[in-house]
Image 1 (tube, rainbow, N blue to C red):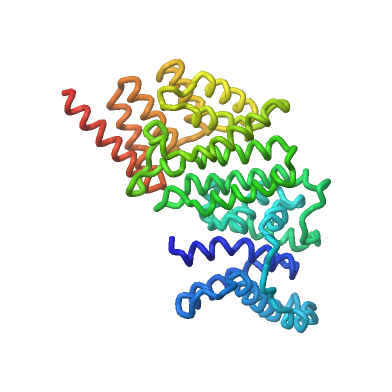
Image 2: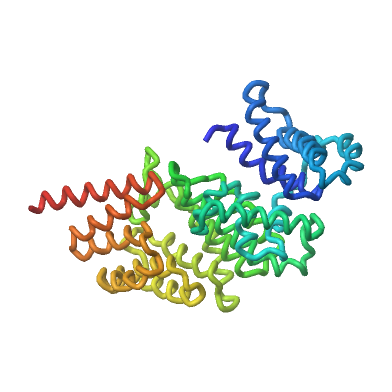
Length: 407
């Protein structure tokens, strides 16, 4: 990613939040901001990045928004505002971060949770409709319609463009946390075919979660989510090799892990867990902490991880949770126990590459090389990620070599 592309990606949600708040038209504001970003991508490489790029984008987006209103017959009543809007200068210093406002606006109580999450991934996370559709396992056209309906519902609701009052956070907080979790996940394990990580997304998710935690320090699941992000992101530097190749957790150089982030995450989750029955984010953070505190992969406390996954599965009947529990079960009771649990997922994750990849790994541990190769080939064929595909091909080559040496 170029420096200019990174800057525009960073500025996009902030500019959208400012324009949507000022002019109270989320749908048109998104179109206007997209046009402003395109103008910047064409203009800045030639003329240079302006001294205040955020103000530049806000000014251009405001002008585009006025043009959109003028060309829309259904909104002619807005033209009486045009003179006012055209004379309103963008501030030289935009010291208010509107990304959090935009996040809560997208997690609107009038929207279904799935629509709120999809809209926020688009507006705040900067994901494409195709990427969001992949995350939700639905066709791209279906997701485009869902996002369009969500924007229209926000437009017609007339809810003020401002952060909700503290006593109004509850109806939106679950969606906000879910969105932040998904944005972070997309950054840490990108659905982009060509890149394994998108640091900009994971760092923005951490920043926004810190802000939510600052405002709601007593919310255990907010603290749990922040701890989970910190403990997971702490391993990022060791997760890829010199050429961007995937390095699985057991093979990572733990000296490259961010010990400051680990200490902060462990402190957060240690202070949060005793408050009461832990929720899903706290449980995932506790699992991440067990991994991060192990000095070596062999020293990992797998019985504790297995127990935590068991509790998490009672909270979330999610096939991916079961998949991870199968790995932990294999490490505690042997690969055949893990394989038996994986068999229960065939109907819930039909043809999913992660199921095939994990099954291949456990079959290798069980000594069934040919069956392991078949599963790894199926996983390599099905994965949308080139880095993961390359890793799987490397594993296939290793198993083939081992087989010839043992022949």
